[in-house]
Length: 403
Image 1: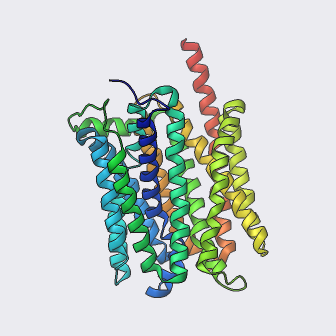
Image 2: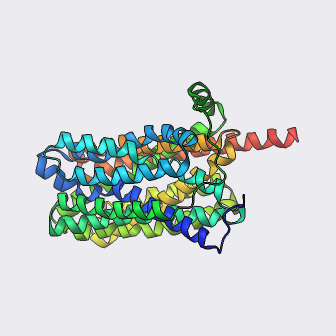
Image 3: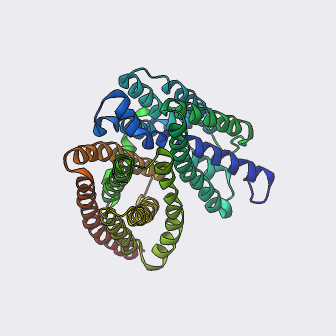
């Protein structure tokens, strides 16, 4: 059975389907982020507590991703991804009718569980079905759907909240996502290179924990945790600052700030190329320094300078995440997909813990407290990247001696 080749109608359909699936997943996941001030106001809760509507989803997603990939080995790639997309879309609509904050959190946890089906399986599907020379392009299109979904979900929910309320915003996100799910189901080519296997829990768990014995991987897991903790903290609470005096921006304008995600799409590609030329350790550290500088610039009270700081911060984040996640495949010696899922697990746990902890710093010390937390996390990340460089260098020497 031949692979899907670039230039064919099947190739275009596969990429469009996974673009739609990525848009669906990340629009739902991040669509509540600009709504946090409205959720806090309606339910009379603090910023930190309102952030649980996002953190609860990401922690459920992180845990479920470790399971969803294994389920796809038994039941197939497309069925798991399709069920994930349709179920999460329906839950997005139901979430809009939450009469209490507790019920909202319940629905958001369920969303995190079912959302895991696409990100945990999509890359495996592409790796199995797309011809190797075109795999990089296919992966890039899928990831662009993720970033555009995250950006689009935030902007759409911000606009709908401004003109109506956050309930209508979530209904809108749910309907758009449901349509994207139907597109995904209708046009994604079936798997031709997938072979179902028995679910063996013992071997799965054993191979999963063996990843922690691989030199360097633990540092990458920690860096992913720190990167995402910083990123979500900044974006969770910048809205609280910008809708308050002296800025007093509307939800629509706050939502459009997420357009700076575009610089992340560029930085992940550009800095990845530089990492190939100059080494991952060096460019990862540069990326972390860029993130650090951007966070500090946001302390400036001038709105335009603050937005420039957010853009610089975003550039550094996406560059660092791209390099760290790409480094996983080089350092993992077996079950690379499992190693990648562990990286994403720590990545989203960082989102949950960092995002909520940032709320405590915001409530206690304002925007300065959030930035101070980000600075500490980033400095730890830089120190870990230095240590990681030594480990990777030592491993390369051992590999060359063995040859």
